[in-house]
Length: 203
Image (tube, rainbow, N blue to C red; front, side, top):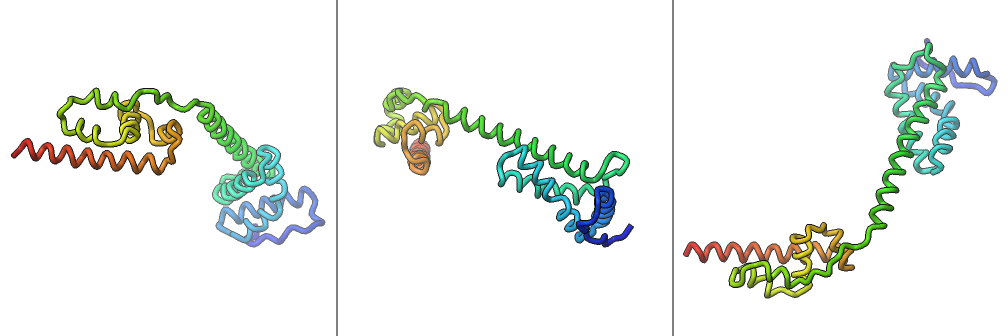
């Protein structure tokens, strides 16, 4: 077997193509990158054709084709002539890759659609209920009483209702960055207040 197979000519018939693909795979198994280039050029159109038919998306098909030839390069040594022609082996790799990608993309799409169909969380609970749940005279109570009603609402949604920052932003129509920064600011104030209260108790 030549380590540098000759390029495929237009006069090669199916059997000759099959023989050259076998040679190229053998050379690829030995790390011959030129053989990979020849193998790629000879089979790209058919591999892409399978990928685009399954995925119906050019960008996804191109990603799959890249993965398929990477797999072919990495697994060239596992090819066995007794189990079929090289092109059939390669197109099976492509079909499996494309179907896996299709299932993944479908799952992602359904998850996104389900999330988008969910109504915003109910935020009818009054922010002042947070104050009512904390003993009056406690330093935290005093701090919460000193912040705005909007900030108390954010704290209530985050820690009483257990909503994520993204859910709070969606429910309140606030930018996500604003939600995060305001909650962070209040928490830092709470930490300072708790620390001062602890030090006062030790005095």
